[in-house]
Amino acid sequence: MAAYRYKAKDEQGKAFSGIMNAASEQDLHDKLKNEGKFLIEAKEQKGKVRTRRLKADRLADFSRNLGKLINAGVTLVRALKIVSEDESIKPQEREIYADVLKSVRQGMPLSDALLEQGDTFPSLFINMIRSSENAGNMDMVAEQMAEYYSKEHRLNQKIKSSMTYPKILGVMIVAVVIVIMGFVLPQFEELFAQMESLPPATRILMGMSDFVKNRWYVLIFVGVVGYMALKLFFSIPKIRYYRDKFEVHMPVIGKLRKIVYTARFARTLSSLYSAGISILTCLTIAKTTIGNTYIESQFDELIAAIRAGENLSTAIDKVDGFTKKLASTVMVGEETGALDSMLISIADQMEFDSEMAVSKMVAMLEPAMIVVMAVIVGFIMIAVIQPIYGSYQTIASSAG
Image (cartoon, rainbow, N blue to C red; front, side, top):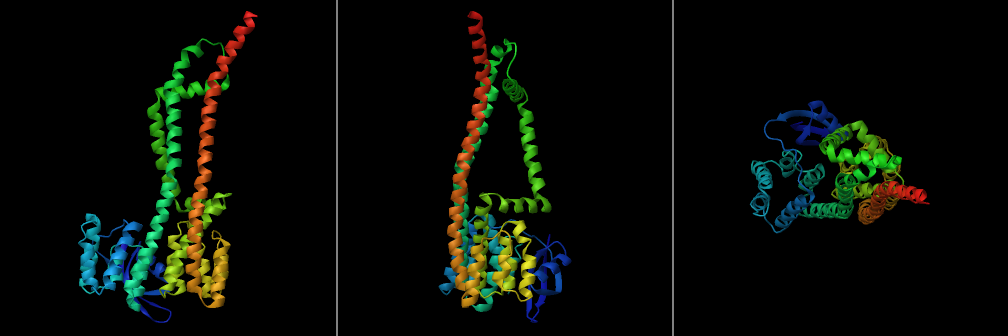
């Protein structure tokens, strides 16, 4: 993927310029067309193109510092210099900010300087900065973005912390199985060898135990290869599409995932729309933050419907993967003429709902994993005890 410096115009003849990553000039043309713009001129940028995106907490910190400094009357160049010289940031991050500062000093708008960094800054952030350059309220927009990415970081951290216990349970299940198979069951081999016949469950278990004990390296190899194969398999666009479609239609879990995806979309859309960006551009950018390719694939039809004159609420209601609450709230905003405030309201509500949804998913996952562990340990105990109990019965019968 290359970086292209481009010039384009929209349907009203308004000129745009900037830098965008694209696989080819045709790909650039298609991306701009989706934003309602028409490519006039494009030139490939030579040099280093970064592909690693800044994390949400770092974007929040950068936005917050930038907003406060500009609000205090500090010039943009001076503000970027102060941010880039902060001793608390990592060297790679400092290098990014220094490159942005260099471009701004050469007369480039901040939005283009951010875009020049490849995939480092998300399109949402770049477009919000671009809108603030036109409106002259960069300090307010920067602080708004700081709040946005702080909330995103808090939600991500909540998901990670909520998954800690299930991960520990998963590791414990694997560890218990390895210890039992590799060290405990081999102690019964001599006893079981003296028995004339063993139950099917015991034969299966002892075969697995022998394999773990003598062929453990095969399990490691299969595990590593299987993990890499699954990652490669689900990286195929068509496979990922069907996986994401199945995810939102799963019983119980699907409903909770819909809430999370709706919350992401609502917050992004509210931030963009309140900044004065056109609704078509808002939708084009907001769809990239959802995180589900099945839902994102429906936005081409949604945008086409809005271009044809359909209401936003009606178009969103047709998207399979969002909660119905989003469309009904947007409809109220359209009828009252307060779409921006209604979007902010639904975003706040959906974020709360998404936190509750994450808690519910973890609450369901924990007992399910405990049941899995109980079934595994129970099967092992039955497979071991069954032949021993049978031999005692045989001895008692012969003695009688």
